[in-house]
Amino acid sequence: MTNMVTAITEALRRRRNINNTISELHSLSDSELNDIGIARANIETVARGLIDIHRTVRDTNSKGEVIK
Image (cartoon, rainbow, N blue to C red; front, side):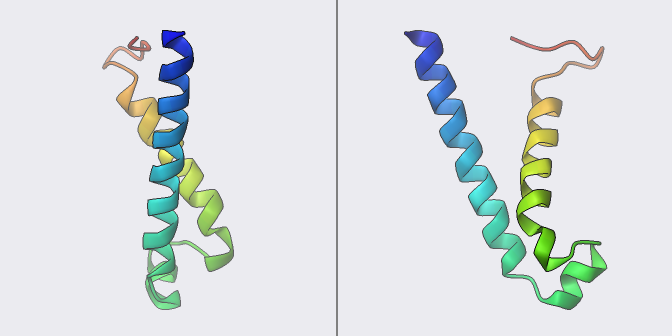
């Protein structure tokens, strides 16, 4: 039961982070997006990738081992 609650909580946190990132990126002008190398059509894909990278960094120690 605890694992299920943890998984649901993590999924909700991930979704909220993705939505916030998408919202922030959509608030940028096309010129600002171009400056950081993002096409407006790719905002959702980029947001998902950023969240996954952050999660990997957060959950991995300096030796590359997954922290549990």
